[in-house]
Length: 626
Image (tube, rainbow, N blue to C red; front, side, top):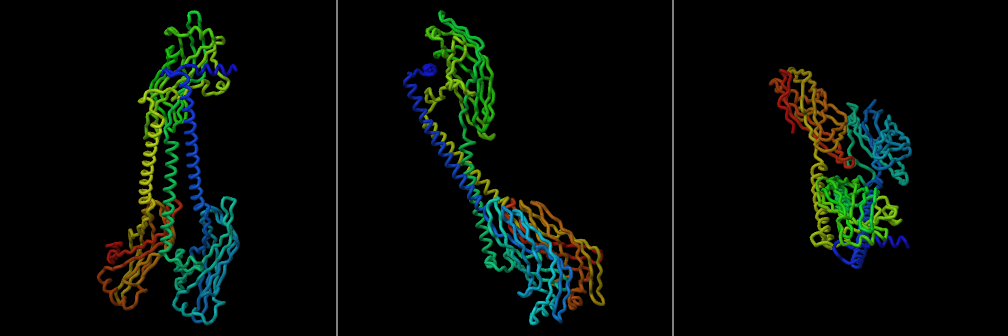
């Protein structure tokens, strides 16, 4: 019962606007119910947005991370150790070193059982090599070095081996199948098989594998249905996949912007309140009547925004029944984002300015009720670009127990740390239309601004995505040319038969214009005289960093003995006599551009250059690349 009496005393003051207590309480109850309803609606909106956001995230997660793809198995570089062939018999015996590469494109490990790679000639096995059981880490490639021995002992006598050996080109194929399981997130396992079906051409004269680098997945025959897809179909699928990814990214960005606008970018009104009050002295005289008191307290400015709140200097006024009994100043300052600014003040109150009040009866009752009012005006700054004016008001009531000279508070409020007084909400007192517009008008204004901010954010994000797609995600063909050629040695003669031998030191430049790494496979560069190849040199695989240039140095031996006799007698002799020899060069490399570690696109580039060798001073002029 005592608590109920005290609670009633907290709300017995009339507002400064002059409304009666009944209307005041009815208005407060109505607005309180409206605010609760609006909070429930807002909470439902947030829950709905969160559910949609989670559905989108799970959909993207399911289509990317949780999607299980078939691993790939391929052969790497082939280095011939020994090669013996007898076209007359016919028979061959060959030994070479290679790598079996198992590539895992999934976001989990691929554990595979032991398998066998079979090498065949026209469908007949000529050699095998064992693949041990192992595992491939997520989004990586397992490389297994093997030594392979193949021979023609098992071939039938009616095969076309003799004619191929006579032509100097041996065509072999290889097949393998690995069975295993892809393990995702330690809980999901799925059976997957990796198949290999490769072809290779062995140059019997040079004992090299001319088919390396191996053709891409759509470039050689395979036993599965994927081999039936044309290059155009694969390109169409890649474009479709890219469009899906871009669409998902746009939807995701829209959801992020919406959530950002409703949370981070939403500007809330800061709150200004009084903290704990410590009474230093309190003197009262009911007979006069008069009182004076001195106490210390904290003025707390609570900023719930995701940006600082800079406010101007203000005054906190303490009143008794609408008459001022004391004031204290609030200096100009700033409250940080999601924090509370605490200002320690010392307050002195006196009733000397009061007249015609019922102060005496209230002092005789043993409880003195005062209230405090203040208004802070300032700006909330969000993300260093957006500023919005916000005013924070305080309207508190407090009751002093004259017998104990302490602040008298209900138990339910005394247990709170941040605020121990029942505070009137900032909209409890209705002011003029200019100062306090109606709730619907405020809601409509905020909705319009929110729509403008969201629309501006969507337009901005669309422009960013468009520029990003046209600049960063656009895959360009790298540049490939012959930057310099120097002659190390050169010997030429025009009689009795025209001939020349030279060693050229060349430097090739691979310029990557993309915002991602370009990894290229091993290949070769050749020199030509007319339509005939006179020199060739191989270079290893490598990579070019984003927006960088990689230089490859090669030493190429040029020999005219590869030319037909009629060419040596005819045009070659006249060019050597003139002192100028026209040479052309050609090279072709294939590789992939890696963008953001998720997007890969194959790019094949070639180089076609012409040059003139000056025989007299052993220099190169007129080097032109197309």
